[in-house]
Image (cartoon, rainbow, N blue to C red):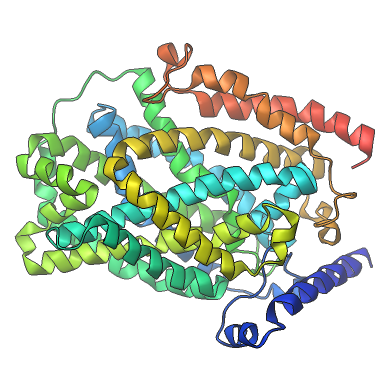
Length: 487
């Protein structure tokens, strides 16, 4: 009876929200065209009817099969000074570890019908979730900015400078908006097929220029500090998906085995990411040794180098480079879709604003920020990836501990109270467990603009320290909060 009552409450809330959004004629027309009108409201059981969980694998496979992974891998050799072997081993082991949290958290999407940030309300409460939404927005918008810059630079390189970086950024951003605007079903339909031309284009690129990857520049001596610092960059590439992973499987039927959800997510993240990052590391190691590649990199960043690799293919190579640039739509569109949910949770009143309105706002923000940042992409990327991994550590630590230690099952996430502040946790324990770890994370940071006293000896261990300290803080504080408030 309780389960039926909860589903009824969610259905009532959802119908009310959809009524607000679709009451006007043009809202109705959008809905009839297939635009998703549901926002952050939990998906009732009867609407969780997707019995094709392979869509989960195809989504993550396509979102990861992009030049963004290549650019991230390039950081290890070209900027951190690691050898190809050291960078590849770092990529392998850190990615295998980093994919576990998002894959595990993703199993709760079909079970609860809740977006990832809605699940976080059961740790942070109704109002403190503002902190999560703010940091998640910084993370997801940041990733979108990096992605559109890479795509824009690639399009500019193909045009020989006739198309500016700025215009290329605008083109990719608008194309991503069209997919994200339509919502869940269209995003999954696109991701189901978009990987095919992307994979073919990358294979052609390697076939044309891969023989030059053997010319690796001399690397600096491998140290634990260099490995850990690059490892932090690698972790951040994958673990930050944990802040939104359930958003892409909330319509999956809860009868689908959780292990299958986990494996589809894990495989979709790991299988393309590791080889593409290793390819990026190989490109980064060879670039200083090949004059034409270095010149292409200075002019067009990663996209410029990949276009140079395709030079033997002539005009067809330019077409392949365009396909590579547009392959980033698989990553950007999915991320922009998740961003609309983050915006709706920023303030309680925002949940009444239609999801697709925020997709337009997001596109404007991404374009406005990407154009000035594009001038120093690699340095910005290295700094950005390092910093967001610290947030990923505390987020994963809190929501994972809440589920594994306190709630223990999906049935304890009562969907009827998702928007009721008096019944959700106060959130004091979660907020304190975000703040306290940073007292030790900061000395363990290693960025181009700051290196903490501990990191000078160990390298960047901010992620590892952050997640451990967060868990150690959250367990006693959440226990105390529950005893005092009963929530």
